[in-house]
Length: 102
Image 1 (cartoon, one colour):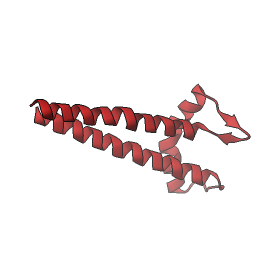
Image 2: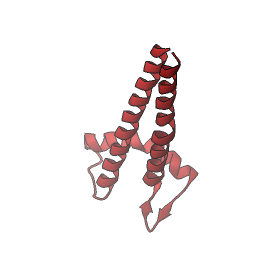
Image 3: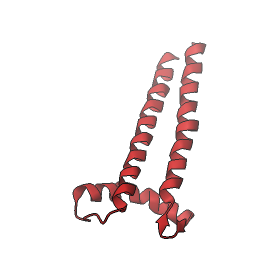
């Protein structure tokens, strides 16, 4: 059982790191959107390319524009915090219980 516990703990750790990294990428994109970025800059293209698919889907589901401000990154933050609080924590707890069982 310890192998499955280690696998679940590693999965939780990787998921936590990926969600945190994606959150910082969204922060960078939001900061860049405050200025007029060069659309041909490779960093800007990377940030838009990796965040736009998620933000576009959120905008389609819940169109939240107020005064020209796009609130879809806020909804993605809430989803990331939920996944970190629920899914990652559940994986850690399940790994801990498996350790105790066997």
